[in-house]
Image 1 (cartoon, rainbow, N blue to C red):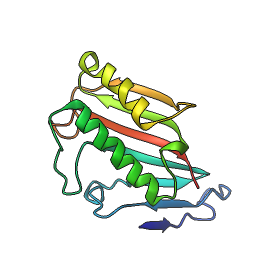
Image 2: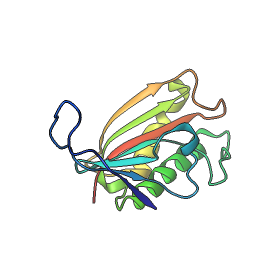
Image 3: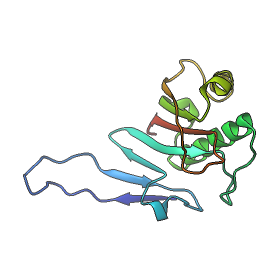
Image 4: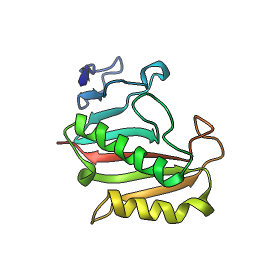
Length: 146
């Protein structure tokens, strides 16, 4: 499901038109209560919000880092598909982990499993407190819009 969010032709200051912004959502959309879009398509790009290792019922799939990472990438792929794109269209990634020392090798493995040459630009960060304490990894991407 996609929802187009209209953008004013010009704001009060007379700023020129900007590209139309389109909200991308899958069902169920667990982001609505937080006032976040799963993704937004604008200006030829699709920006996907951070996806964690949760299933469609909102449950964390496992305590295992790789299992959560694979699910997070599967969730990214699902949102991209709703936008008409795929992981092959990703040009920029952002990955947050709770333990860089334990997770770095796994992140490299996940990049190899889920992404392809030319690999996207990427930022990898260690965070102290994700949105839920059982999350070990979160993945966000920017992809070419199709």
